[in-house]
Image (cartoon, rainbow, N blue to C red; front, side):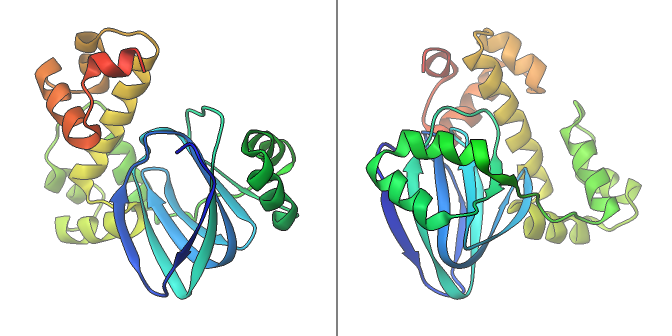
Length: 218
């Protein structure tokens, strides 16, 4: 994303998981929505600014009144950041004039906004999914004291994707970070938990349209 634009979203609309190639910020000007991703479930209302790293996959569920959101480019960031802005109108004006200054100003003065806390069993399941293991999803769910069906529903509600997709997304984000640090594709694939480099290449191309080599020079 290399420009500033205001988006209006109709009430009760759900946007499935999607990605943006460039880092960007979304400032809620009016209304509410929930953003779900591997980072958790964030309740976003007027004055909440969410900064997305490149290729971050997230879904959105808009509230009964819909929402108006100002989107603008941000300096490169490695992790999702959600903050509360004390004067969103002033930040919006600055973003329209100079988005780079707005991004830096927001992160300097803002108060951290944290995601809602999932149930303890769900937090445990996510931790298990993020480990370097290929254990069966059903077995992991049972270890956490729930059925696979319940685990799937809860993951979709809290993170916008089912357990298998959540595990895959964690590995993809890890691999992308390693590649951008200059780690070779085969090493990045192994360290991120993929069975081999071709497996990583297939999933990266499906998710982003890019090969590991292109990430290394992006």
